[in-house]
Length: 490
Image (cartoon, rainbow, N blue to C red; front, side, top):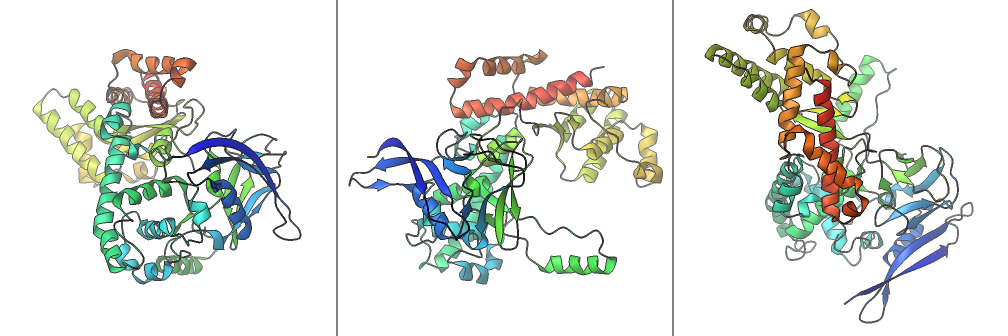
């Protein structure tokens, strides 16, 4: 049995080198275990950071208090744009090329290929997380059995389907779980069986593997590929392209300390990659006592909840989006069919559109308008064609050259009211069908009741974190859809 008490501890360390001293100020939970010993995972991690050459600015501290999540980073003093928050050498990063088992992973790389490309990193994490001698043990010990991870994949299916209906998350999670099961059964277990000296199926179970998938989803980083120099001549570009094809993509990596920073869309720091190290750098001034926030990218709330297990307040997340399934356009077009020839025309148009769109399953709308302009314009043009126009389209094997070359129309909130009436009707009714998928009543009462619940502070705080996060996702998406319906109202 464990009992928990909180303490504030300030540790002043010696310099990592003669030029740099830094202070680690941290709030640590000490756990009293049966034998009376104390486990100090955060303190151990920070001492490990020092030993591997990680340089932390004296103007910040890692904390378990005053941050938006379990861990976070706070400014102890004002920081300027361009200041380095911390620097971590590449040797301290954890990925398939730095792990203790890197040789065997590289030797049998071809047998570990999967659609995600994550299996080698996950096998490395299975080994390092359960090895008492792991170089990264102080880092990985911060996540005791990964109990703080609360991705929807750990919710019951009933809970996902009830709380997240219409958001697209239940379907994404079902796909994730099926892929995890397949990769573990078809790739991981056979690999483990070949290396019983390093892995054990009784220890390295599907349950642990699934938790590590969530850990990678939430905390891993992918180094961007080098951008081409616009001044390179064509021959150099062709050479680089050929070289790029031979070069394996940069591996996913775990970046100790970077995952201590939380995310907001209006972030104040960003991770930069250099040949020898990675650096967290301020992108704007940070005031004393402010939290230092990184960015995970332009993430809608449904993506944040699906991949990271949290959301931002939907009103302040400028990257929030709502998807309108392409299939809803077809359903709306079929609603207006009056005759068999008209029905056949719509079916042929839909078949052609599916070939053109391929795997583009949804149109994405943000707070300022459509984010998939080209796809939406293509779909609207196709589904609104007359019989004669569609026949000409097929005869020409596409649109005329002048139509192909024209820039896609803007579908911003300012532009939507001025669209053709037939286009507005399709968008409006497709959005209406999408809203119905949440199980809401007509007339916008669903989003209004959700918003009222969120504005009732006492009622909202009385909800569990899962219901709160689900509410943020639903409110954000439905607000965008209702705004879209208003803008396309005939």
